[in-house]
Image: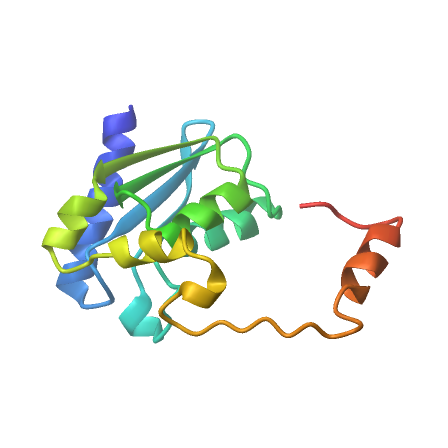
Length: 155
């Protein structure tokens, strides 16, 4: 069963290359053994660096279920998720992820995100893209308002 869903993700990746819609990636989200969302990578077709297959499938699944939490769902993806997709997977609270290729396979095809893994471990002031903290007097106010809000939806 897992192999069949993973094969669907791989087919999406292949189809994506053939169509020219984006990179060689595909993702399928399954709930109760039924595909509820599927997507190929759409970075170039959408002109959106966040339009990775996993992100697009997560967005579609959330709309399908009318929920920003994907508990009870499984992600099948053609390749080990990049750091951005990994973050989205945790925020969406997917139950499990199955992948076919790993990050080293992706790097061999010129999709190397190892520098991002390296950057995450650095303090902001030591990252390649300059990041500057500015301490404004009211910077914590949105958090204070949030903490006092009685009807907030936690995520």
